[in-house]
Image (cartoon, rainbow, N blue to C red; front, side, top):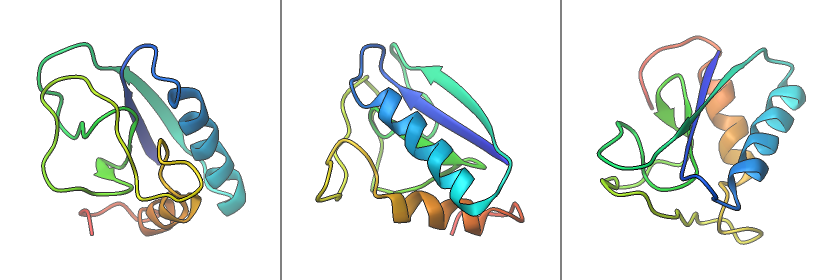
Length: 103
């Protein structure tokens, strides 16, 4: 399964986002391939702020719109607003065991 993490260089939440994805994959027992993409300018498809986690091209915590300039992203996660909730990542990985369209 393909996971892509889009981030702004220097983002303090990039490492924790990568750890969160690895933890979720281990929890579910799924094999993933992680691609890390630094966003330094311009419009990157799927980028909604740093960090953005895409599973098979689908955002784990979809929002309305995106960002054309590199910026931080805030999530509706009470424990850490700089990361999506673990449940969001687990749900995304579970949905995409059989790749399809974003749901």
